[in-house]
Length: 439
Image (cartoon, rainbow, N blue to C red):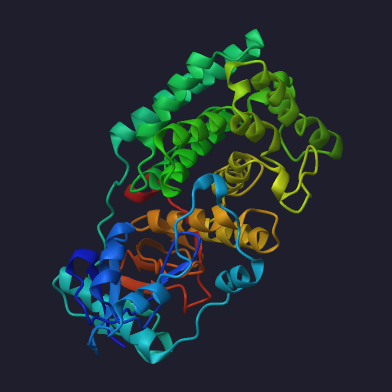
């Protein structure tokens, strides 16, 4: 089955959908095999769908009964507001997040070969297809250029945010009060850093120095700004979510700095003390102008709660946890595992996705927020340089965004393409820093 990607504006009646189209919560908009008619195309345009994979081996007449076809294809796909977004039943979620890759098939091999040929054509070189036993690797003979993808302007803006956030935390530590105006200025400083095309590449590839906890707060705030965009929040609500992220760990300013800088793993007694930051932060925010915002206040207290009641400090369950807390719990976990820490190895984002997926399936984390987060982060990783577990360096050139469990296709520095979905003995070990990319 040969597929071609068409912008929605170029779709024609009678075209056959080659890959299913989904809402961010994985509700089906149009199923694979649907024959497009005018009403379906118009509906896709209104839903902000950018492109559709269309079969090239078949062209059918539009359905005779357009109203009935549209009604059937779009049933149950109405977008939901962020304040009402709930997880679907976990049985279908579990099947969508199955970590076992799809079995190889002639159609999939053909689609991959077509993609490789398109890449080869762009570099004006002849492709050499290796034997079928290693068909997950294809070589063009031309290595990708080791481009320095970090923009100096972005790095400077991040450095300014880090400096101002450090000053705000120290000011709060000294005064015991939250300067609401300073928080609003910090949130406004975060928003320009929330470009999905570059934010993920930059915040996890920059060389950072200084206080890990401040960098963690800055990155979670940037992820919150991205999440607000991905959930199509109104600008005001995006800003509120970023403010909650900025204040997420403010309770740590009520804990002795000597304890916070302690190296090594926490003892059970240490963990009990550290867990107090949620209540301490809640008390600080409650006595600030943000205390009147139930979502912001709830996020500070509840971002370590879990849907199944296994979290802290109150062991709340999903229906008792506010939306902002459920969102920020996911971002907090992702950053803690995807970034470098003194006491733990930085994980590959794809390893983190598996861990998050397990928690979503077990109903510890919210599927309604976790699924769009994973999907959009995957999209943002295209073009990123990575180190593989076999020691090779490469660039992510393609991720199948129709599958949540998809692994990337990576082009190595010697020009080989490796499909990690089929070559399961190799994995992404880590994203590379800006310095490592240019060495």
